[in-house]
Structure formats: C-alpha cells, structure tokens
Image (cartoon, rainbow, N blue to C red; front, side):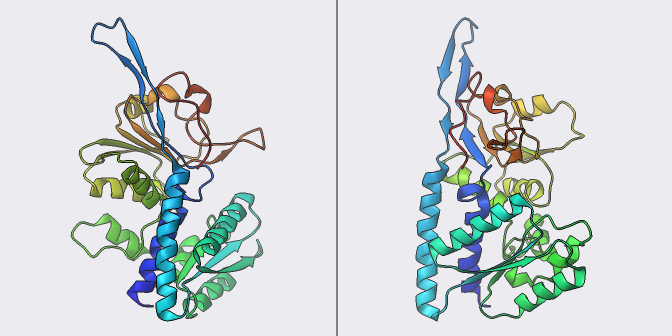
Length: 310
C-alpha cells in the first residue's frame, strides 16, 4: 500500500474516530468560570464556552471527503476500511455502526466482518490475516474489547503495520513514545481527536499544565504522549492517585477518560481551563449516557450545563 493511501485513510480514521465525529460520549468544553477579585468582595460570572463539536465535525468531514475524492479519481479505487467485531456488545455495535456510516458519508469503502462470541483465537487471527492480503482493504480495525478467551495482543499484532489505522501496533506506539525517531504511520484516533479539538478551538497547549485521567493504551497513554510532544507539562492520574481533586483544580487542560460516570465535579475545573470528556458511561436511566464529568454540577460552578454529546 502506498503512502498516499495510508495518509488518506489514516487522516480520515484518526479524525473520524476521535470524538470529532463519532464518540457519542466525548464531550468537550472550554470553561469560563467564576472569578473572584483580590478584595474577595465581588464575583464575576463568565459564561463557559462549549466547544462546537458538530461544527468541527463538519469541517473535518469536508476536508476528508475532498481528499478521498481526489485519491479515488487518481487511482480509480476508493480507500477501504475493514472492521472486525466479535460478539454482540451494544456499545461496540454502536461504534462500528457509526464508523461504517462515516465511511459512507466521505466515500470510503467499508467492509464488516461480524464473528460470534465463541470464535476461536485461530479463527479470528485468520480473518485478520486474510484482510492483510486484500488489495481493496487499506485499513483494518478490530473492535475492542474482545472476549476474555481471546488474546487481544496477538490479534492486534497480526495486523500489518501499514494497515494498523488504530495505531495499536507496537511499532506505531513505540514511535509515538520516542523522541527523534521516525513518526508512527498512525496515531490512536481518540487521542489525536482530543488534540484536534484543542487546536481547532484555539486552546494553547505549549507550557500548559495538562491532567490526563486514565492510563489506558487506547486513550490515556497516547494522549499523554501527544500533549508532551506539544510541550505541555503532563500529569497522568489513575485509581491509585492521591488528592485527585487538587491535581484537576491546577490543570489548564483536563482530558478525562476513566470510564466512571460523574467522577469529576464541575467545580474542580478552574476558570479558563479546557476540558475534554472522552467518557461514555451507562447509568441507571437507559436513555441517559454520561461522561466522566458530573453534568448536574456544571451549572453551579465553572461550567454551563452540558449542551449535548458530541
């Protein structure tokens, strides 16, 4: 696969899956907050600015659609994305459905491979290996998480480096984490999308204190690397972190991806800070999906009420 195909499909996937267009639970806001005068006698309320994810999504979709059309015209073949899903998890099915819908909107060919929950390790690896050898497939996504009896690392390592559009191959992750080395062919999509949201919302990163809540291979670790590459001072927090509240209160940028609804309270976010909430968590009300920031507190402190998921 040539570099142009990788660039077109990679740009699409990184931006598309980042929360710019797809993540139903990725909400992003730049806070205004409540300021206090030096005398401590008066308070000035500043309205929070909600990052317009739909607007950014439209911009990205137009850019990607134009690049896909140009590539298709030059080669006579649209870039192709294969998605492999195992089992019937509703959240995974939603993500896969949105990925395929996104492909349709920008002209990328999509191929879906649905496998039963009890598929064997060898059968799954063979499906991925077959996709490696297909000329009409330029990118492969294996939807995570996989069932417990499947060794995810072996499956992900089977994907060819040049088709690893999720950016999970050890070489892609290794290049992401090292300075002065060759850049990764692909960067994990949600972390890249967080940076894209900040950039397109004119949020400065260099020299800022950034707190990342969560250390997963999918979001926490790679977004920390990306923020450090942009010269932010990064603190990674997790379930063993002491005094989490004060660490968040001192942050200029907060990226929350811990998978726990309402973990971060609205009044933890200091005035002027930028918050990106990557979480999507089920709560008792089946019609309600929430991020890691507690919505009910957003109107009482630094943030306005949540305006809707991106």
